Image (tube, rainbow, N blue to C red; front, side, top):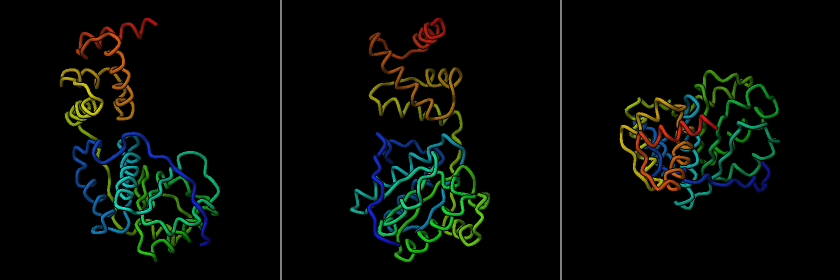
Length: 233
């Protein structure tokens, strides 16, 4: 594959292993860290429902690799597919993380380009981590040899957090933001807002700003007041 400078990507703020709440997914974090360190699987396929932290983990992998002086690259296919030429030169990167890889399915040009990249990258013994909303075997890849290769390596399903873990995650995230919430506040948020993690994180940041403006702690009565004021607008 011809050498070409890959597209630049920017790390998302606060998406590291240190600020990821694993809950029942600690084993997944360990496998990813071992992969980067070169003592685990060369290829990992991470899959599960949207909003469970797959993108966070792939970004964390790239940060971890760079801290170990490894060249790493992250790309998210959730938007429109770019020109496959972005793969040019990536075979020389020690770690490549591809998010929402199922989006290339059914695109002959992309399937062939990724197949070629996959083989060269693997020949160099470099590491590949992919994510998808479904298991690799369920992706409608038309190129048979590529479909086989997607099922190589280690497949890990990220587990949905139970409510007790979600409350613990809220407390953990609030601490990362520099404030405290009680388990009662965490439970209130779960029952009065969207339950997916990205929505909960966004809500926490908004509530943090509201508490700073009002100079009040985040208590259940204060949250009820904020909701009343929001609904009356």
